Length: 60
Image (cartoon, rainbow, N blue to C red):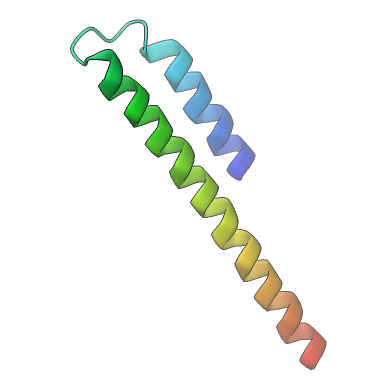
């Protein structure tokens, strides 16, 4: 799932950054960086939940 989101964000950045003339370059870069950070945070949350699930199954 996270790889799919990462590919989507990358694809949208490659496609829309050169075509969008309403935003400054800095705003475009910040938007892409924030999107990448959100995907990384989602991946970390999913890893943490998997760790908790594994830990819970070991105690049972």
